[in-house]
Image (cartoon, rainbow, N blue to C red; front, top):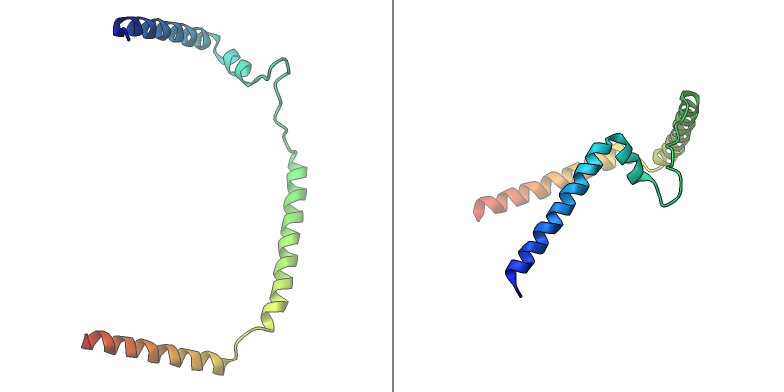
Length: 107
């Protein structure tokens, strides 16, 4: 491979790229819209939602979550622990931690 020839080709490529950048920069905002266009098709426009439409969707979502919370609330009331069970589990956990602490002191 001839390194001199490779360098010459790379410099020529860099010059072509610099020219292309200069042309695109001179277009300004027009260059941005050209890039977004698909071959032969007009640029797609972003759809905007009205404030009323946004409010309607927001209210529907809030209602959906309220229904879910209400439904979950009924199910969770049947699965609660009694105070005695909670106290018993707490005591067992305290015993486990006391044993672990005792082991750590002896080790």
